[in-house]
View (tube, one colour):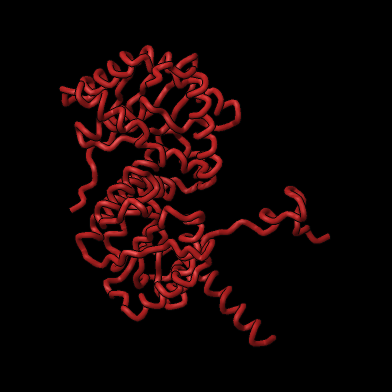
Length: 154
Length: 224
């Protein structure tokens, strides 16, 4: 088995190309087709760590997994009613967003955001929507909406 | 030629009369009408004649309620996101009537705009086979054919993407109706008898839409 690591710039370049191709095909709708990206990682690396059944504990577990695997640096957040604002610094995928912005495409996918949404939905059964990704001051600012309850199917 | 013009006029009338109908009476859609709607879908153009469309007919009240919940939940999430980022307010900036604006925001962010699937007497789940080249286009053509036949029959319909656009919701729709992995849940078409006539929605002028030979050169010119 070849365990040589590939350059990060190569991986991010491919992610950018895939996202850009998806944007070119689906436009603003691309965002909604990438909400489950990261699900396997979530199940393998995040879910086993989540012991808490509150947002603070869930976010702490996701942050711990991402930091331990070297995906992100600092992660901070604030809650205001249903709005969850997450600030992520030092994300290894940040160049993907920079490349998209340089081509006039608003960033529409964030793996840490997907993991947070998957965690809250899995542990609290509360739907989560990523409303916005802003790249500011060297960090990504995520605006997420956490809904009270999932509409009943019966 | 006279017959040809009559057919063209009749066709254009059906196209122009189509509306997105979200309120229906309790009267069921007859099997005979449904057969015509599905036959219209079957005759749609298809790349390589792959005919990737499949349809699940849903009349069961419990299944309709589930679809309504999924559609309302999906719409509500997306429109709430648009609202909290102020993009919805920008989109409605030209609407001066504040009461109407507030009502529109409420209808969109609550998901009511799509939850009506629960009360439609008939929902058609349009599925598309993934292992073909042109599935999104083929299924969209089939859907438009259905909408036009619905209109010609004096019925009403609405093309609802809300429970299929987000992959998380689409997965639930597929589970609900047992749709296999090789197929995508594309859209839901609600059908029924409209409760009232609906006015046409504004359309952009052809002058804004059509170019001559090259992008940017107007095809239709203002008369001198």
